[in-house]
Image (cartoon, rainbow, N blue to C red; front, side, top):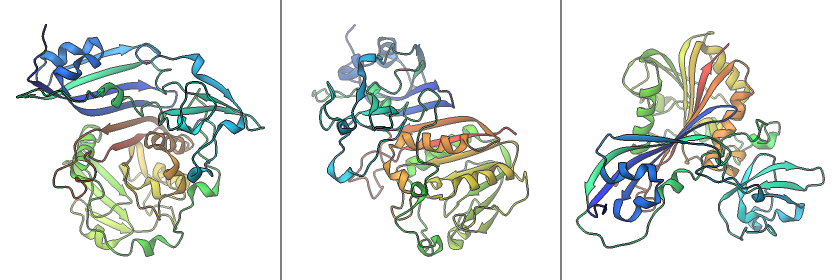
Length: 402
């Protein structure tokens, strides 16, 4: 059958999988040129792309190593000298379970300088020798691949051009948020340096001037609202932790309490029924009774928390039995105030970092992660001229289990 050269398709692609610690769902928006790119998809999905209508959906399940090959020959025993990051990153140190661009390693067969794909350090010996896994991080997992047609549009001409492998784009990142062999990833959680910042002055100084703006673009904001609409209860009492000028909550019968550091921002947030002004980095205790809230959300802020274990214990305390908690973030942050480990991590590793914090907090469980990427940035966004993609969305969430 000849493909319709005038057909284009907008898809939401998804990969659903489960690790030892959590369930994961990663989504990716793409616009497909059917004539040029359909054959880059697995054969099971081509009829949907060529003939499907808006809302049509399909999924296929693949065993570990089936769609993404796993090759034991790509696990390398390396000497200390083979870890050779660029000069400007020479202070980066190897950590067990962490990912690094393969271009950071030299003298490894088949790996070239500048290779941006991630490789994972599986073990590190006392003498500094280590084992590097250059396989795709999802190659060890069974997963479902999903596709839903969001829109179909007509193309009036076909001029050729560059093909894009949208499945590769979807899968570039997923898998990095999981532990290796159910062993905790070494994020340096016991080290003070991990939670240090370039600006160690009191946060009340840095945040004294109100910022009456959104901290993600409007598409990412809408995606987060839609995520919460699907995952929050329809009613209840919500703590908007580290709140500011804008909440990201859907419509619902909610009583929303905001806790943030700038009173002007909180006063101007229309979703808050009440608010509390407090610097939780100075004192992570929460001024609420036990089991007060049905839900705690912490949006675009976990990367600034310098005492996360103390804060998470408080989150558990103020949650009702079976209450839900959500930590969302994107790829924006204030460099002076972000914790140093955050800067060193791949965006998908950041979900793994938050998972490790949660996993070490007794009484929290049923962990899940979600990501959504690939949407175009709104044309009226001030950054649209320098960045065509909308801010990505990452969420780590779960439930109070005891």
